[in-house]
Length: 175
View 1 (cartoon, rainbow, N blue to C red):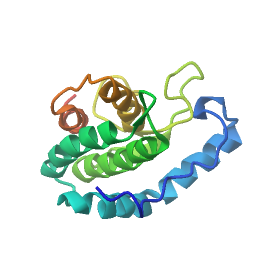
View 2: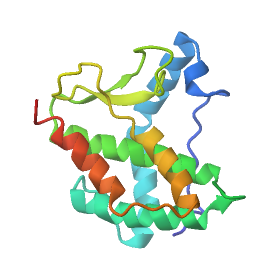
View 3: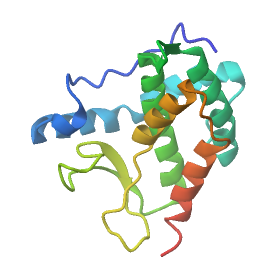
View 4: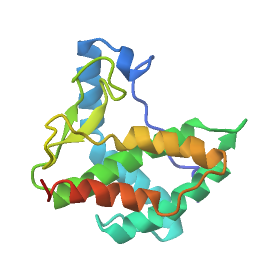
């Protein structure tokens, strides 16, 4: 992996997203949405060194699954993932969102403002799934960040990223 030319995503906020006021949260959401194409291109440039093509296929997710585990293992500082990894989590979340949206016509990005006590409050999430709970969403970035911490502690779940994306796709086709 050649991370020398990788540009870390700057969320342009100085506090956790759940603490932002409405205006700041909307600005961050717009920044996130407006950067999806560029961030996926940056991710493609990074993973191309591992012969991974971001072609919206589940095969690409399988390859990214193995790549991500190795990437985290190589970028742990004091037992924790570094800022490079959290930027990768953000980029992977954008790509996984693009994959799900390409396969699910009603799924879309939205700013989660359901309730301030929600773990993904003020975060970009995928919504519009065909499930009974109309507030159901998927927050790939949050899950990837948590998984990065688990990988740093050698708690690796085989094919977790594939299962995650596949589960989201399945939820847009069933009721």
